Every structure is written in C-alpha cells, then in structure tokens.
Length: 153
Image (cartoon, rainbow, N blue to C red; front, side, top):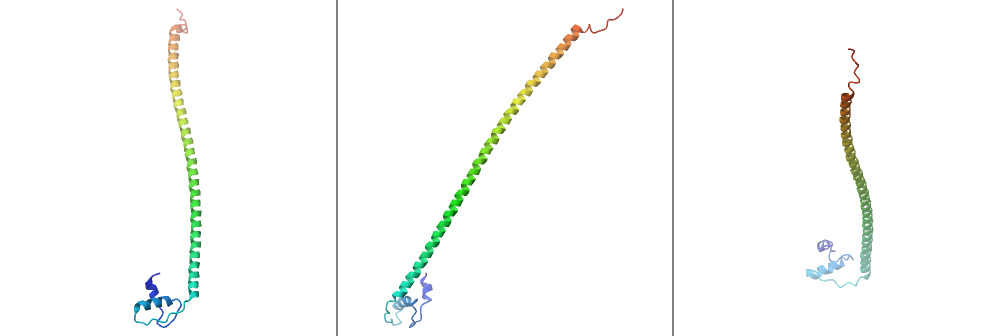
C-alpha cells in the first residue's frame, strides 16, 4: 500500500476512528501545527483483529498458491503424457517408414532381378532364333532337292 493512499483517509482532527488512529498520530508528529492529543490507551483488540485479518489473507494466498502449484503440476503431468504419446506415435511412424523402405528396396531388387531375367531370356530367344535360322538353312540346302518332285523327262 502506498502512503499517499493512506494519507487521503486520515480522520479529521478530533475524530477517533480505529483504522486511522495510527496515521493521525504520525501526521500529528510531523505537522507540528496541531497539538498532540493525549496518548490513547493501547487497543490490543484492534491489533489482534488486524493480525487475524492479515493471517487470514496469508492463509488464503497460501491456499491459492497451493492450488496454483497443484494445477501447474497437473498441467505438467498432462504435457508429459501428451509428449510421451507423441513420441510413441513418432516411433511407430518411423518403424512403419523403415518397413516401407525395406519393402521398396526388396521390390527394387526384385525388379532388377526380373529385368536381368528378361535380358537373359531375350538373349536366349535371339540365340534360339539364330540357331533355328541356321538349322532351316542347313535343312533347305541338304534336303531341298528331296522335296522337289521329280521331273519327267
């Protein structure tokens, strides 16, 4: 609390208000113009009431602080749980990705092996056709006269 806010609530001279009595005494000490009133008897019940009020406010603040701490701890636990779940999902996605990459690599290897088999088959086909062509030429040259009908002379 600021002193300026309290100074505005100073009781008028001669009036007694428990809330303003200490301020009136301080103002009177430094003002010098007003005669200092006779010392008042100590008001212990007001002091005890003030202490009880402050204690109640402190307890309320402590309760609020504890509630805030519990809420923050709950939020941290939730965030940790969410982070662990996200990490689990990321690990699962990485495992799926590795499996997909492995399948793709196996498929590429199968494609390469199939391409090699196709090349070998095409080479064997070309070789077989060449052999058949030579065989045909050989048969035609060797047996070509046998298939012709004899001419009558």
